[in-house]
Length: 116
Image 1 (cartoon, rainbow, N blue to C red):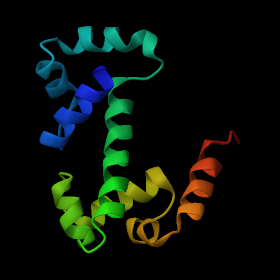
Image 2 (image 1 turned 90 degrees about the vertical axis):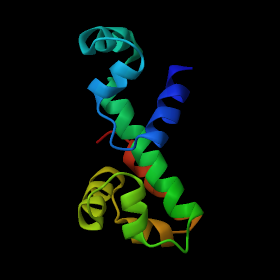
Image 3 (image 1 turned 180 degrees about the horizontal axis):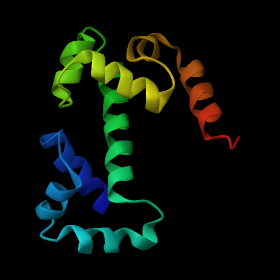
């Protein structure tokens, strides 16, 4: 439930920090982190995960939109930083991800999840 609420807030405020997120839920940062202690993830990790999901969705649903425009919509100051950020988290640059077939994207996700 909280996961979906965070996604709604993140769509409205793409540059959201953990401190601001805690404030949105009426909690202090420390209390907010304690709430997540048993979840197996931290609020920061969840924000990153949600941002990556949103970036992937934007890249695949807005095919005619420029990467720079998507980066700006997601709260990044420029598309170079967005490309670097996306590549570090997904394993390929945004343009390549956009051009990959569904089969290639599934293979990439599966490869990333395997323990090394």
